[in-house]
Each structure stands twice: as structure tokens, then as C-alpha cells.
Image (cartoon, rainbow over all chains, first blue to last red; front, side):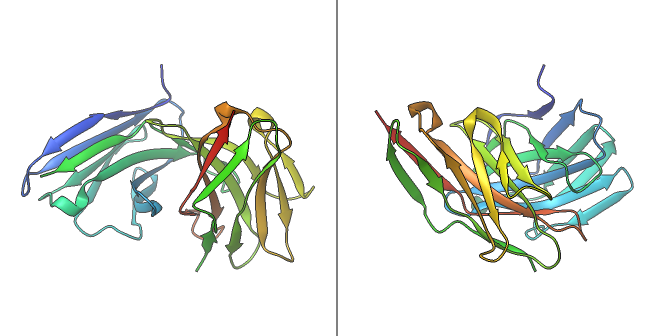
Length: 113
Length: 113
């Protein structure tokens, strides 16, 4: 089984709809992250969480919210989706020390019509 | 603020030839540098990292990277490219104060037979 899973893998929705992307991990890591990937723009950090009670905004948090339900689960919500939120979304985890690499989920391809 | 630059959007090499994917960075304090690879329809996978010590770092799949502090560079290299190395490569730097990473925009490597 994959260490970091994301659901759904693909989603098409309409402008104004609320949508939730879910991430689960079995690596036992404290730190979890949400990124979006757009062609030519690399990965941009949306939100990150260093433990269940610690949630921080990244560089592009407007229009998004998150919930850290447990150490293993970190959800990303779009309260009212808009077309420019069409992107590939990745969840990632890492161990506590900053020398450790990140482990990425397979991604969710979101299309907002 | 930390930043990463990958000056080439695309790198093309012939199979069997050496390859270099360039990365330069800017960070206050000690740099913690990472390379990741993304294959089509997959999440990012960790290749290698520089934390401290030897400037030449060896990683997965025969890749290595050279850390150059004076030039603030961390170029990814492989002595003999394979067609299967064709993918999107990301360089990342970690901020030791905040613990979050900044990614470059990515470089698409194409290895032709």
C-alpha cells in the first residue's frame, strides 16, 4: 500500500461548489503539507501543519482552508471553487527534523468549470 | 526570503551522454538542498539531498549533485543518461527556521535514444 494516499485522484466540479481533497499517510510523520502544481510554476505551498494543533498558511492560502483531523489525516477544502483553482494538488509529509525529505502523494487533478 | 532558480525549462541529451540539470538558490543561513523527480501522472519522488559534509552527494538511480557554496549552486548530474531518466526534475531548498521548502519551477529532461 502507498504511504501517502490522496482522494479523489480526479475531480471535475463547477464554479461555486465546495470541494474537499483528502490526504492520509501511514508513515507516522508529524508534518504534512498541501501544494498545488501549475505548468511552469513549480510547486506552491498552500498550507502546512507541523502537528495536529499547528496549522500554518503557505504562500497561496487565499480561497483554501485545511483541517488536520489526526496525525495521519490532512484535508484541503475549497469553500467556493473558481476556475483558476484548476490545478494538480499534492499532499506531502516529512519527519520532524528539517533535514528530512518530503514524501508525496500521487496527486489530485482538479478541474473547476 | 529563500528562493530557487532552475534556469532551464528543458534539457535534451542523447542516451549515454552525461547530463546536468542546473539549480541555484538563495537562503539565509545554512542551505538544505533537495532534488526530486516527477514521472508523468505521479507524485514527486526524492532523489538526493545535501545537508552538510562532502560537496558531492550521491542519490538514487545513479544521480549525483554537486554543492557549490561560493556559486550558490546545486546542479544535478548523471554520467550516462538513460531514456528512462526522462522526467520533470525539481530542486528545493529548505528554510531551517520555518521548516518549509521552496521549490524551483522544474526542468523537463528528455533523453533521446
